[in-house]
Length: 359
Image (cartoon, rainbow, N blue to C red):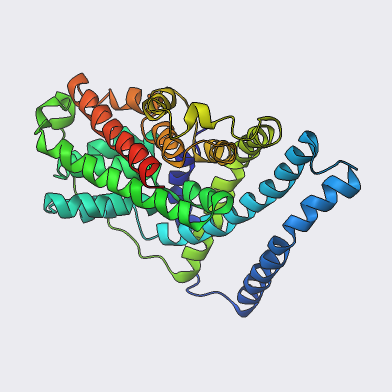
């Protein structure tokens, strides 16, 4: 199951959360204690991985197997711990957004301002490519411009907390910030460009025939409910995507230990002009998510792949996946789908070439 699909499950459980307005002193104490233990354990991970590899398994860390296993033993708990912390924080933020509230925020906005707001909302709202059809219908029938809708639908799966925290944990804050910034620019620009084509007539007729009803009244959540919403996000999201994280890190560990240093430079390096479009073409039909693809990206970079090429590959896998295109066909006519894929693909290509040139 796509890890982004799990975000929307938290919304349905919000009503069942505890109703008290604030946390008790005991709950505050347990929370602070847990946070302190998190930092203590996180700081010990490099030593733990080295000890487990060299002392417990008696492997040479410089050997292929030893190098692969130390990579795996360090990155797996590191990434999972980062996911728990960040998914909780974003879950609390996400408790402020529902489909109705997001729709109201975007409806009636001027197009450029709407593109910017829609792309930014995509980071923290609990929607994904699997939600494309109901979201598209809801936004279009509420009067959200077509280009603004696409800015949101591009940003929501591509620029999400799973991708950002994995990139931060494996490659550092600079690469994570770079990916988030370029992802937002692609979402904003692609949505604006799609809006210029005036393709509203290429939405399926049955979608345009729907009229949006009045949004249901929303009950304001207490601070305690928002905290428990964040904990529910951790259980739902991390509890389901951890297997993708482990599998992705296992693949990355194999690349780390067994692929010769610099091997990927000839295939995905700056010198190969065709590497960026090839990475995008390869990425589009792949069915994966950030949890599975980022550890592979990490290993590819270690072996000499160019950052721009790897970012283009990752964006294509997440934002232009074949399953999303198939889902969108239910509400879009082929010409509009072709424009969507072409515009987003061109933006991703530009990102790849730009960063290969300047980095």
